[in-house]
Length: 270
Image (tube, rainbow, N blue to C red; front, top):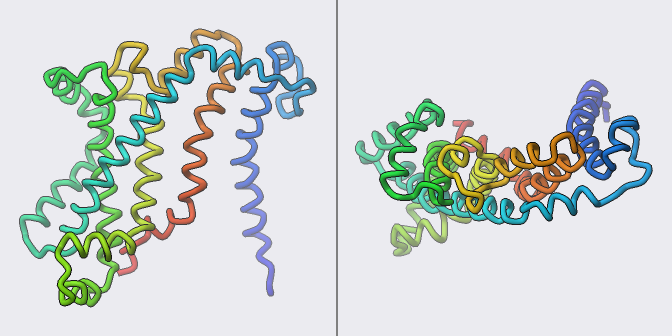
């Protein structure tokens, strides 16, 4: 077998680019403040300490993490519950009204969230949702729906028409086809949507910044901002907070990464 040395070298460079910052972040979070300023950033900590993590956990990190989990889980649930039936309707319905609705939904891909923040703020305040987790969840889910529906629709269009027809001949209702055929076959696309939506919701900053105010509604992105001001030049403590905030979503990515490529490329071969 012929070895592909350029590909191997490229993979090694990519590995260094990915692992290097992660190593620096974790190593620095295990240093003391004096050790961080005097030793080489790439050198393993001589006297590792968990004091930075204790400082972060005592500074309200648990509340920020809980709010982030709630926002992410609720956003993913809304997007999947609305996106799967919508994609099923677009892929199977010959109605021009459905197809025009899909085109209108895709127009949302061209609208950045920053351009709509004032109308969103006014809408949230008039609904009396300001300074609540719901105020973050709803617009985050709304901006994730166009991409989610596009990915799911392309996946469902890959399903042979004969399978749909066989389910219908067997007496399955539209809900039965959705449950017993669509959901199992669209699993890679659904996992892709879950990971994509979770990443965006977990790292969201604009909506939490504008639509929340109190400490009880803070999420991790704003919490890290507060830690930066609270700890000042205590960089190891800040990196400890970043390490803790990255770990949950990193686990989600590791679980769903093998579905990402197949989910994102579904339907584009036609």
